[in-house]
Length: 74
Picture 1 (cartoon, rainbow, N blue to C red):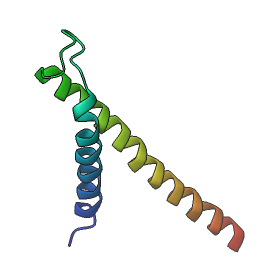
Picture 2: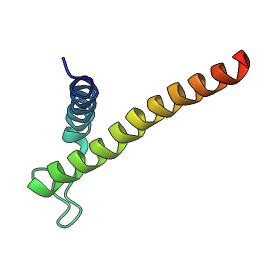
Picture 3: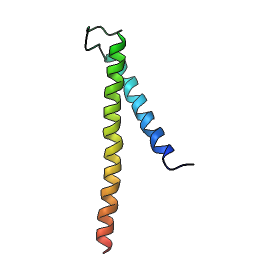
């Protein structure tokens, strides 16, 4: 399996899960109704932002761990 497929699938899973959790509580930023498609779009947008922060944070943590481990070995 390609190395890039698993991280993309993991990001999409986080995005979908967070968007699903935010969906029932989201309201449209324009009209203020909860059933408006704008509310679902805003939940998806914020879900992508939060999933990106989780995804990038884990990558940076692993990168720093490898970098400091390499420094310890020298």
